[in-house]
Length: 382
Image 1: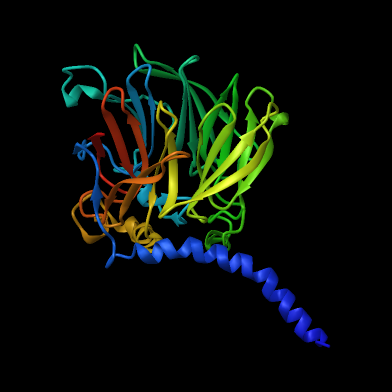
Image 2: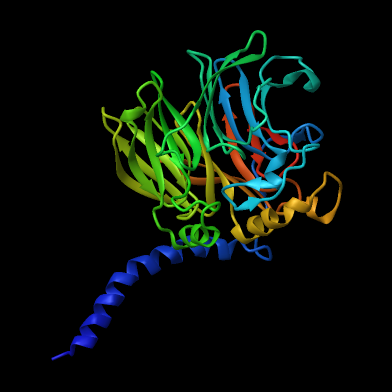
């Protein structure tokens, strides 16, 4: 008969094996994407990097096809203030001016100089991540990781005819401790992801352990901005990031720790039930959808490069010094049930680095890729 010690060892291995298997699938793409092996790929008909002298560190991009407009969330101050990656350095008032921009990608014959406009926002403590825009009410939601107040949702009414904004609220809630990405459900209701349970500002080491262990500390929170008491956690996802609806009943949530996308079934009460996990060849950052239902993904194929970049970027002073260089690789792909995962763009960081979002309007023949620490945005023809 086996001894008690042997039984305990077998049980321990049995319990540990699924976690080790999961971590193998999370880290194996990273090893395959190390710089010496990374293969560039470009499936675009044409592309150009625009607004290098105007935009920097653009984290999220969303498009409103009915208007032919894209909204961009950009923050040069991310060099010194990145609550997700754990950078907390003193502000440089001369350069750290974040902004939300509107890019008119659809008006024929418009010169590039007239396509990009900065929205006036009366908030000096702006450090935006994810965006969501409700075209019916012209309401813009911004996940704001402010320096001098708790992280919150900045809610603005946008008058597109005059390009002005009116503050509706700085929405805070105890469940929104690390808001990252936003999806609008309608009628002032949202899904909001929290990327971590242990924030870097509270425990830098604990946050990193949560990231690399794959612990499901990130959450998806149902939020009713008119009835905050109804807010509740509806799902848990390791390092939850971008969130998007594939259809009326399926919600996709990106996981940087899992290197994949969680697909949930949504019921009438907005509860989420996990249906499957789609594994990917990169840590997925933000998500978007095409009009045909395809899911678009952008992210980071080699996390060590991005971590090294974020740790040294605070020394960048806007010049061409070594600290200002961005060499973290980029990756963009699409996914559908029928076609599976199809890679669209891979770059070792030489042309365009640190991709964080890809959006596409195939009807108008335009797509955009943003870079977390890059200058400008990559505008392409699909």
